[in-house]
Image (cartoon, rainbow, N blue to C red; front, side, top):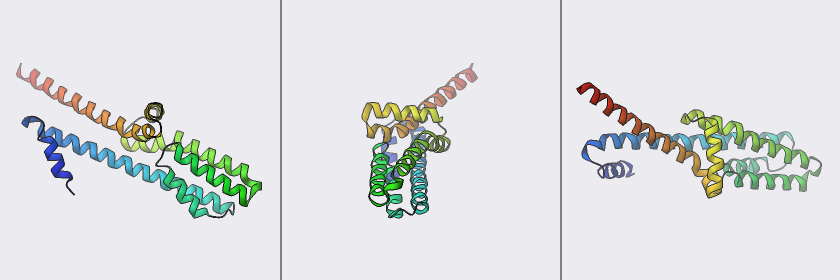
Length: 182
């Protein structure tokens, strides 16, 4: 509700000549963070649909419950999908023990494909980041801050990239203006 007034208040903290640039920077940052959240939601939906399809095809109970659990768990890197996978596998062991190993392998494959291929490609493409940068960022974020670091790694990388690009662009404009005066 007060987003624009907060942006203006923050921009007023900067020198008068930089306020327009700061407001444009805030707009780019907020747009990138919106894209990140939307990409996360798409990832959650994809995961939920894949889990629902698997449980339905295998005639396992609670397909919609595990689809929802798996989809929501994608918001918590590594720990979330691990818990969802464990619960899905334990439930399968209790109801259809003969395909427990297959279900465990399904969850393992799903997690590996999601986190090493789909997520870096989806988020990387939407935020103009290389998939390797995303994978490395998530790994380093996890090493530094655990699950929270993994979750915050991509937004942090995007913010740093946008700020550095803005600084570079500003320096280039100043340099061109100085060259034009000479």
